[in-house]
Length: 302
Image (cartoon, rainbow, N blue to C red; front, side, top):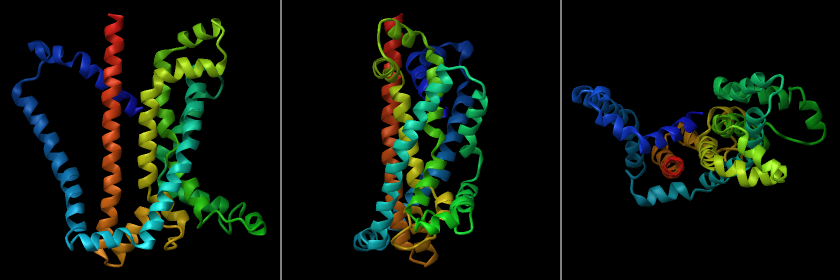
């Protein structure tokens, strides 16, 4: 929902902010404007930019050879593979769920609709550690299904399936929460017109609904992927911290740091930071494209 708001704000910026600031009655004084801007930039520099730069400085403090050695270490490569695998599985699952949930909530009226919205928000309000403990309670050796899983030689906790489940849980709401306000704002008229003209459900979704929500959908996918690769709390509970087998990149960084291998820990952390920066770059591009698309639509309607 925050992302959808961001997209709408980006469109509003492209359309009307200049006129708003050009009017003396609605314009802030220069002192207030620069005070707010300076506070925001100072906060950004101290709490966001400086720690990010420190990660790369510490990662390269002992030279490129040490840096590369830490990244090509078998345990680091295993952690990278597992991180990408968990994200690759969680992303399409949440994509399907997010589209279905948003479609149901935005297009249909049914009993329990508000309860479903509350359930979608549950991962936002529950600590990731608690989410991990829930899966341990359900699938652990002493959990509800533990004896049955042991009897059939299936392992979920302290194995890859547990990590995937925890990742799916914490990334559950991102796509749905991006699409629900977009679909609600667009209404049902275009879909109903397509159905009247003879389109079936799939054709209506592919040619009418999807083009209208594509930027919000892509934004949700980016946020889901970023959270999946950086998740620590829930994955830490269900992984078992088995080096080379169930460690994701954040867990591998923690282990290296606890073993006082600071250069290696910061090197792997810098890799996570690079992935985050790439994600932010793609997110910015999506916002830019969405703002221009909204501006084009507004110009076409005027």
